[in-house]
Image (cartoon, rainbow, N blue to C red):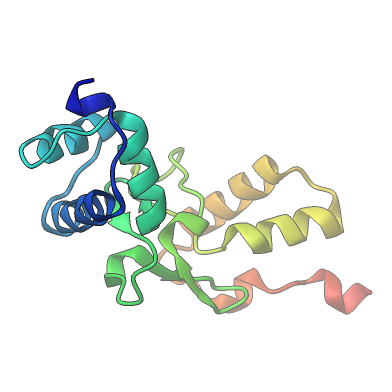
Length: 155
């Protein structure tokens, strides 16, 4: 049985996780294949073992792979919602590309969009488009009160 298909011991799995965390912290890795190539310099593992190690480390991917369970997330991975005013992972905000470049993410989190959808019944895609246009239109004078829950006054 060759090394690629044999099971990893607990120690080997822990070593794999350490190597992965070092590789992810030191490199801006965009694809799974690129991650496999970097790791193949140190050890040979199959893709299922690599996926299990990524899951165990809490690795997430936005544009690049990053350690999601790390308390000291870089500031570029945290964003504050202008409605609920909570700091959340960057991936909790939808990216919109009609008026903005691909790097732009809305200033309202997915949970607030979902809440507005449940209260108003407006489709999520329509809400995302509305907020995208509002952010584009008022980009120089964008304020948190533009994101208020206006329906609370009616109820």
